Length: 133
Image (cartoon, rainbow, N blue to C red):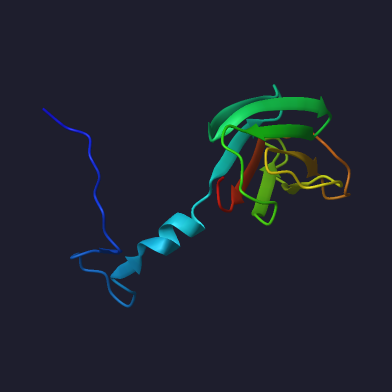
């Protein structure tokens, strides 16, 4: 029988044979540096293939999506990164926050082509790092 519980520690270490790199990391780096919201979007459908902390995905038109979080950020000073890829051409895209006000609960993102046009792609990925409320 497996019981749920709490494990408290300040440093995560390994006894493995890691060469040329640190063998431990402060847990603050893991907690602070892990994405708190991410979504892998099938832009052709559009739908969320997989996600963490993603409440909904709204299709606003060609390459334009609004993604809402299940648990909000505590403030708007989070970090966002994203990218896309067309399965047909293999060209990389940049997926960025749309113009406008940042929000703790949702964001509008646009997937831009090489010519800076907005377009749907087979793979659109967005992640956010910050402190949750």
